[in-house]
Length: 213
Length: 213
DNA sequence: TAGATTGTTAATCGATTAACAATC
DNA sequence: TAGATTGTTAATCGATTAACAATC
Image (cartoon, rainbow over all chains, first blue to last red; front, top):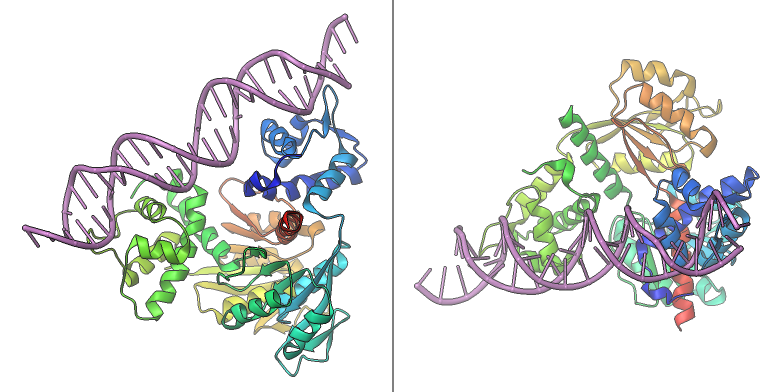
């Protein structure tokens, strides 16, 4: 295995996609796949697939290809999906609930342990079987529980303040849905989901297509 | 203005981000900005900012920089945010509601006109002031209304079927939240928000950081 | 005019693709 | 063994950065 820190983000972002298709094949009972076949399915070139995988080691076998089950597992290991991650969600609106729901159904290692909100009407309610706690208790909750990931589905105005508390509380990663850029120390990982940015770029291509007609 | 079709997606994805910061400056009453200042704020190099903008024309002025208000407007125009987009949401769970909510508050040109679901308990309800309609009526609704964007917040299993109906109904863009890749004809734009992929890549970096300590 | 900063060309860097020897 | 397909090096392509002449 190479020095992981040199592997580009572009490669890392493709891994979950490979894994998604391998999961599919695995379920369908396919047990081997060549980089060429995989290429046709996932839409990257066979060469790129081989390059990507060889950043982490030789998972294939000449003349045979890749074992689907094994490659699926290996990619999971690379991503760290063989572990559990404890998460808290700050902001219990529809988006926060949607995420809590999703991770609950989709039996994965990402476990929502706590949900927090400032709204007194929500505090104490059970959302998706998880009690909504008072945001004021977040600090003490983080002190008592070893939380890996903080999910920010709170409003833009409070997002940085929430972030600071989460970082202070020892989370190692932040998944941000607020439409702004947060600052975090270097040892904390930040991943943004900027929905409006995504929608705006969609608008661009819609117009481009229209103009071409 | 150059041939838009040659502009890379990387550039397009940066535009909403520029615009976001310009909006901020504009609100704070700043009226000019140099590529150097902008660089410090948005985090791309000044060189890249100038390159990006010059794909679409010369918006700056030598010795002065860029006019904040004007550049903000121009980027909006490039993205097509000076128009309105009619949207339908298929799948009225938390995620669908979150999006309906967001676009309603955030006074933009993206208007949710209809929401659709298969669940009889939801049909007829008003969610965020928009009536939830029977999914079976989607075809006729699309025939009668000129819808630009279809938002897929339905489950994975129905996502492709929903897509086909939306395409058949004449939408020009699809914003997909289902955790799978859809096939659409070339004239329809597809933008995916693969939340689990995003979370999985976050997991990778969390582990990398941990291992480095 | 002098200083500042753009627009744009040229240089560099990195990522993707092609090619092929190694080997199952 | 012959055929297939990987792992890996080399070539290409594209995107980012640097540099600077143009010009406000």
